[in-house]
Each structure stands twice: as structure tokens, then as C-alpha cells.
Length: 101
Image 1 (cartoon, rainbow, N blue to C red):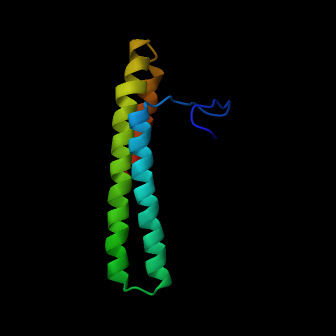
Image 2: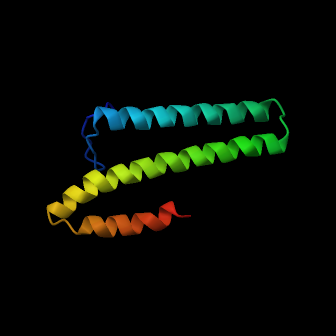
Image 3: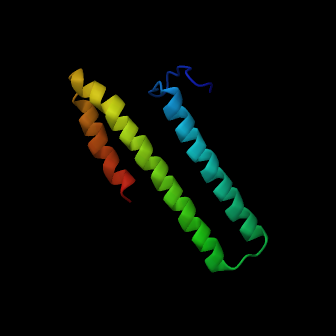
């Protein structure tokens, strides 16, 4: 789906150009890390060397999640609270355990 297009099946969010570029940049780096790990497996690289790269990819995904969550709280959650949409707090509280697995 194109950036900025609406869909009836889920909520959407307009992101600033800066936020969009930052998130896409992180995802591109993570995608490269995953391709690198796949290449290591294909080349029969030693297990511990692969595991170090997996740990780095996990850390990168966690960093992406932290940035996205912080942006979500600063924008979507804050705006909904200002508008009296308290269900957004329940949504956030339900999300947190999923992020902390």
C-alpha cells in the first residue's frame, strides 16, 4: 500500500517525513542484517559467529520498537487522551506485555 493511503481494515497514522525516514532507515538496516545472517548460514559459518549477528539484529529490532513506541505515545496516545479517548490507554496497557516477551 502506498504511504498515506487509507484502508478500511486497520487504523492508519500519518507520520512526519522525518519519522518516516528514520523508521524506514532502521528497517533497511535490519533487513540487511537478516540477509547477512542468512548468508552466514548458507556459507556454513560457525554457530557462535551467527549468534552474535542474531543478537545484533535483535538489538536493532528492539531499538526500532522503542522508537516507534515513543513516537506512538507522543503523537497518537497524547492526542487521543486530549480528545478524551481513554480506550487508547487500555490499548497501550494491553500492548506493553506483548512488547515485553
